[in-house]
Each structure stands twice: as structure tokens, then as C-alpha cells.
Image 1 (tube, rainbow, N blue to C red):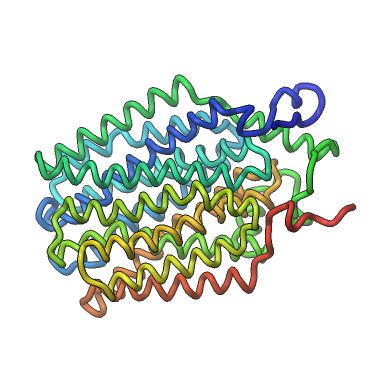
Image 2: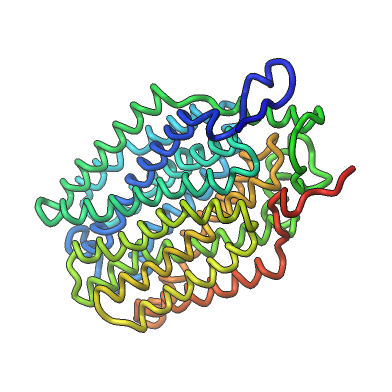
Length: 439
């Protein structure tokens, strides 16, 4: 079921998943490739940081540097990508993201020290900030408001399934051949295929966003009116949109901080899970499966958590997800053995699935189509800066105590407090469940 928005040329752009199924499916394939690109570093690189890349034992903060660099760069580029895409279009920014990924496999192959891995992750931040941002934005452009939980759920399912698959596959490849060559061949193949398919098949979806904006302006939009913030310019400048989403609007601020804190978990799973499990005696393949369980459960569960938020609202799943995910992280330290660690990883994955696509959908709900890409860029700035903030906090805490376990406890407590903030400060954003008052 699709509706046409507005008269004239704007009416040519039909919103809805079914009406745009080809492009919707292609964008899912693109974010799967993006997930593979980041996933190739989720197992072998941290597990073999000392043996392969010369990192000194016990250097926890330096160990986290490759995630810290990635987080701050990706966060900034998310914001840049959102602003750029409203000027030059989504497709062009997507292509730039894949061009940035091409040197990464070569840097891993020839890295003489850990510093090269840190530098490679700067480029990985550019790739993720541009490419993943555009898959999210494009899906929001072409779908209807009541489908955004479903759309973001499918988007993040595809992306984090890619992350999980890459972690498992590279673990097996590294066990059978030289680890660097395994990462090089896998990473280069993914980047080249992704760039080629984006060049040939990516459509420009900015036109759909402009058609939706026209429908709101002309009064022809159908359905409940979202609670867009008041007293915002039709086309807000960079400073206005950044401050609005960061702290001036109470609900936006609660969503932004939750996005930032939940990345503490992803940073922990990326770096400390492999290192900690390696210290417990697990092989690289076994570590790949534990980390892979987290990613697969997170990714697959979003197929139902996204639609769930379309039915029951955004706020409840976000709060529940923060608390369940934090509990899964804490429980990892309280159990022992491969299968129990897989179970706690699965619990954390379910929590992430509840909160992750729902946060994106909530930001989209109350963002006007004129500036939705920018507001998503600001939210994603804070969310992925959480890699950097979390990496610093987790690394400093572990350095101070000399124990990896401190990072786990810090992350679990932060998730609990962040969920409480959303519970107390955020409004429900779903336009059907909490529509704007009639004028």
C-alpha cells in the first residue's frame, strides 16, 4: 500500500516499501556489505593484537585506540554525511564511503605496528559514516512513517548480520592461512563488489524526501501528524540542527545520549570480548562464534523488534533494550564456559535489537523531511562518538585497575543509567500513538 505525496512532479515519488521494493532490497544489500567491512576486524584483529601487530601486553588504553579513532571519525562523518546528502544527494555520499574503504585491506596487510591499525580505522570511520548513514537515510526517504520501525529493523538486521558473518568467516580463514592475507583478501573483495554495485544500482532518494516535505507544506500529507519540534527553521543551519538534536529538545537529547551509551557495549564486544575470551583460553574460531552469536542475535532479532516498535511504540523497547543488554554484559563475568558465554552474548544481542533500530525510528519520527537527514546525522554523530567516549572510559578504567573486567562492569552500569534517562525524559514519538495536536 503506497500513497502519492503532493501534486505535480512531487506526486511521481510514491512512498512505501512495496512500491520501492527493488531499491529497498538493494539498500539492504549495501548495508550488508558495510557490515562485512567492519566485521572483518571484530575477531582476528583484537584477538591477535599482541602476536600479529606488536601491541605491548596490558596496554588497555592503547589497545582501545583503534576503536577510539574509529568512533570519533565515524561520529563526525555521520553528521557531515547528513548535511552533505541534503546538498549533493544520497547516492554520491554512498560512493564516497566505498572509495574510502579501498585502502583499508592494504593497510592491514602491510601494517608494521598497531599504529597502522589505528590509522586504518580512521578510514573505516569515513566508510561507515558515509555508507551506513546513507542506507539508513535512503530507507527513511522511501518508506512511510508507520513503516520506519520495520525499515530500520531490516536495515540494521542486514548490517549486523554482515558484522557477525565476517567475524566467523575471518576466524576460519585466519586459522587456515596467514591472518593478514585472510583479512586482506576478504576486505578487498567486499569493498570492490560494494563499490561496483553502488555505482550501477543505487538510486537517488533525495527526491522522495522532497516530495514528503511538499506534502506536509501543502496539507496533502495523509495520516497522523508527527510531533515535529516547534520554532525550527524550514531549512535549519548546521548550528541550529546540531543544538536542537543534542540538547535543546528534551526527547532528542534523551535519544542521543542513549545512542552514545549503547555504543559502549559495541566497543566492549569489539575489543574486550575477544581479548578477555582469548585470556580464558578460547581459540580464535571459538571467539568468532561467541562474538558472532551477539551479532547474529542482534541482527536477526531486529526483524521483529523493528515492527514491534511500529505497533507498541518506541519508548518501551528502548528502555527495556538498554536494561536487558546491560544485564547480558554483566552476566558474562558471572558464568564460565563456551556455551554460557554464547548465552550471555545472546541476551545482550536481544537487548541491542530492542533499542537499536527503535532509536533510529524514534529520531526519524519527529524529524521534518526537510532536515531529517541532518537530524539523523546529529543523532548518529552522538551515537558513534560513543565508540570513542566508551573506548576511552573502558580503556582508562581497565588501565586503572589492571583488569579487563572493570570495563564490563562500567558498561553495564552505564546502560542501566542511560535507560533510566530515556524513561524519565523522552516522550513517545510514534505519530499514531502520540500525534501532534490538531491545528
